[in-house]
Structure formats: C-alpha cells, structure tokens
Image (cartoon, rainbow, N blue to C red; front, top):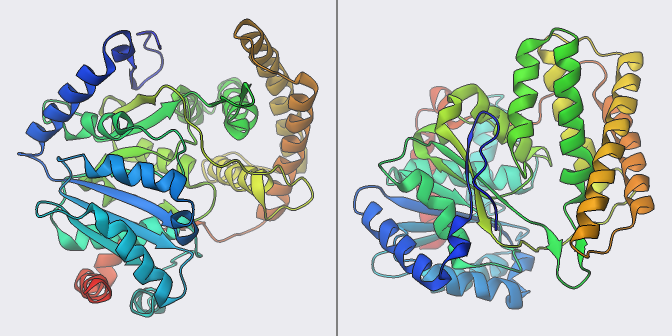
Length: 420
C-alpha cells in the first residue's frame, strides 16, 4: 500500500483504501460515480486491436467488469488492425455485449472506407493525420466523441491488461467526474512486477524515461534554462509517465494535439502541461499490480519493440528542447548520452536494493546492459531528427474544425453508418 506523501507540483492520489475492506470500498466508489453520473456524462474510450479479441482470457475479464459499471454514459472502441469488414463486424458483435438501454456502444472502424475518406478530406487541407497506430485511432475516436457532443468526462485505458480490476476503472474516472474536484486531467500509475518471474517490469520507464528526465531537469537548471527545468520537473513528478490510462475533461481534450508514435504518453503529458495549471492535474494509484504484454528489446531493429519506443520518446524530448531554445549538435547530444547513462546507473543501484529487500529476482548486469542499449537508442533518435523534420503530432480538433467546419457531421455520419 502506498503512503500519503505528496511530492512535486501535481496532486498524488494514493491507494489508501487498501488498508480497508476492498469490496466495501468498491461499492462506495461506484455509488459515488453513479451519483456523479447524474450531473456529468462519462464516456470510456477503449483503444483495441482486432487481435486482442482473439485473446479472450484477457479481454473477456475486462468486458465483464465494464458491464457492471452502471455510471458509464457510453463506450466507444477505437478499433485498429481490422482492414476487413468481417473483422469490424466481429468487433461490433464482441463489444456490443457492453450495450444496455442506458449505455450506448459504438466501434470506430478506423481502417474502414468511410473513416479513411474523412482522413483523406483532412489531409487535402494539408492537415497531418499521422500514420496508422494507437495515437491516430485515439485521435479519430476523440473526434467522434466531440461530434456526438454528449460527453463531459473521458476515460481511456488499454485492452491488454492481464490484471484488470473494476476498481481501476472507477479510480481512473472519479477524480475528473467528481464535480467537487477541480481536476481536468488525471494520469494513472501502478506497480509493474511480474508475479510469475518475481521481477520488476516497466523497463523503458525505469531505465530510460525516469533517469533521463531526472538528468535533464538538473542539466537545464545548471545551464540556466529555467522553463525547461520546470518542464522536466513536471515530467519527473509522474510515477509512471508511460501508463496508458488517463481521465480527462472533454473541454481539455478538444485542445490536445495527439502524438501518433510511441511518444504518445509523454507528449500528452506535455500538452496538458501547456494548457492547464498544475493544481488541475493529478496522478492516481489505480491497482495493486499491473501486468500486460511485454515488448522485446529488439536491439538490432529500430522499428520494433523497446528500441522503437525509446527512439520515439527520445525524439520527442530532443525536439522539445531544440524548439525551446537549446541548440543541439553532436557534441551536446553526446554529453546528454553520457549524463543520462551515469544517472541510470544510480537508479539501477536503487532498484537493486529495492528488489533485494522485497525478495525479487534482479539481474543488475542485464539492467546495466539494457541502459547501455538505451544510450545507443538515444543517439539513433538524434540521427533521425537532425535538420528540419515533420512533427509527429496530429493537430487538436479545435484547429481541424476551423479549417473544416462540417467535419464533425461527416465523422458522425460515417461512424453511425458503419454501426447501423
């Protein structure tokens, strides 16, 4: 169970309920959400690959728990990996189990011809729409939710959570749905420990993002880049910045640019940083332990696994520094590599001691080797962004509507026709 310590510039909402009866807590949490739902309309956005339907031992549990949540106004699935109509219809039937007289369910067929025509219309106005993936699917599905105009609060979580629990859903939404709060964005976090391997997971967060952001915060302060110091301090405050779960007010969601690559999570945090004051941002401990599918390191393939993930995240941070007044060149980035790596070694020592006292398996050599790979991936990111490069951000829907005033009606017609 977490403590009640507050650190940094945002509010941390701990899992203090774990000291009490879990079932009583869940009943009270859902009773509160049902009361909130009388005043605010709550939507759940589920990014899902068609392949995840084929792993029912995971997704069935998620669907069964969501079915019991009476406070959801609607559920919208951002379906990817489904180029065939038969795959879309299979997904419609599968997720249709969530439909009730009080709760609407729709599947956004991102690769379907109607939605693809909308992408084409937007691109014809020279507005980038990114490439196929979770970010693009989430962006289009947000457009559909905005077109419906019947949502006040949006929660988003993935569909590959092996340890899914209905408490996760309720805690994800409650900070934003509660009208007595003043939060507009709430980021989920959790422990990542494999019960079968008795080992720490979350390698990119532990061994790259956290030590890199921590090092950049100190470096920016030393070099007098005070705004960048505050930016990296904000990112350092999040316990699990790569978590895919968050709750957000619809008003704020309208304003967010969305990254279409693996930088989606850190880019979203940055978008929130620039649009709301810190007291409107929270992070919440969602679940005692979180397990999902793991990515391979793929050290020799920069377009796969953790290799691609680290490169995309590093590109975001390097581009951010460059666009905020830090002149990057080979010598400076070389210094960043070594600064990051030395900081990562300090974190690895701490992780090792933490693992030891908790009787976890911990291979310190393998952890240091992974950090060395990540150091090389950081240089790969720099090589890829030298010179002028296109952003990996899809513009916010407020901007798109300025250029295409009728776009919401087009999206609404397309999704409704697909689901008819």
